[in-house]
Amino acid sequence: MNCFLIYPDEVVGNKAVIYGERAKELFKRHKLSTGISLKAGIFNSDLGTAKVLKVGEILELEFIPKHSPPKRLPVCLLCGLSRPQTVKKIIQSAVLFGIEELHFVKTEFGEKSYLDSKLLQQENIQREIELGLEQAVDTIPPKIYIHRDFESFINEKIDTLIKNYQNCFFADTQNTDCVQVSKSSNKFLIAIGPEPGWSSKEKTSFLTKNFKAVSLGERILRTETASSALLGIIQSNFS
Image (cartoon, rainbow, N blue to C red):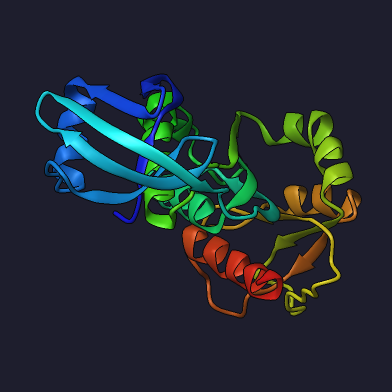
């Protein structure tokens, strides 16, 4: 991993003290040894460097803050709830790109059992966030939400998102219009369905809310591939 993530409750003064299983896991993941220095960051705060003072059942590090985390990509990503392994990849991808919000919603073609996945438990979501932040050398994750019903989401939540994200579009393999982004564009709300796509009713709901249907080509992409492709297109125009 490229960065060592420290949580605020582990910090006392300029030192971080980490105990138990988390200390053991970090010791292995970062191949720590006494005296080394590495890139580090405080969750939801600054990036800097950390010097390892002690290893073992207790990890002790000295943290020196140096600069703010990278700017956010002005995107809210809405994904149809998919298989746990797909959800895991989407979370990490969203963190890597530094987007602002990530929403998962149960769709007509999505399996109801996905809602009961252990991956959606907060501690498991947080683990994927942590891995993504360490890879990206970042400290600020997107806000992540789970919605159990598409219709309720459209009726109760979507209008607020539309107010905050002016460019709204949804992926549709039956459409031929490609995604176009310019640096003058405002914030983006992009919706990507599960692998079978959005249902006709769901597409109508998006169109009623003035979403634009766009295509990533004629091939049927996995949800995580489509989301990364769209985020990459947007990021390249904001770099």
